[in-house]
Length: 64
Image 1 (spheres, helix red, strand yellow):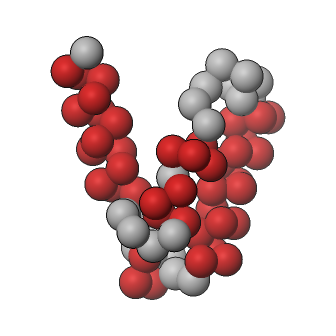
Image 2: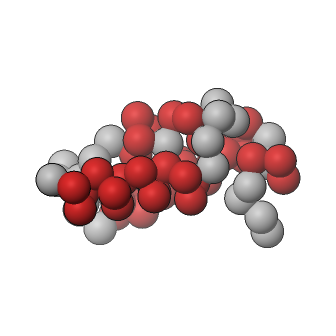
Image 3: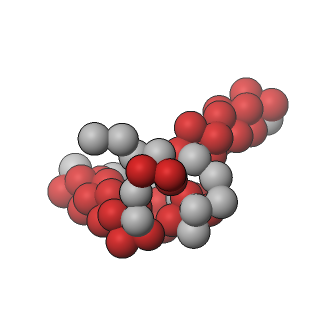
């Protein structure tokens, strides 16, 4: 299954992020980790792909 914006509905993108949030919560990372809803808001809205958001996060991490 493709997670690309062109291959998903907004509801499917929300479900994917919800699953990630649940997984982070199950692993006890939700209190220490980033807000996934905020981080992937552009993906949910269909503005940027997951890979674009992740690339930005990695570049921000390395530039600090």
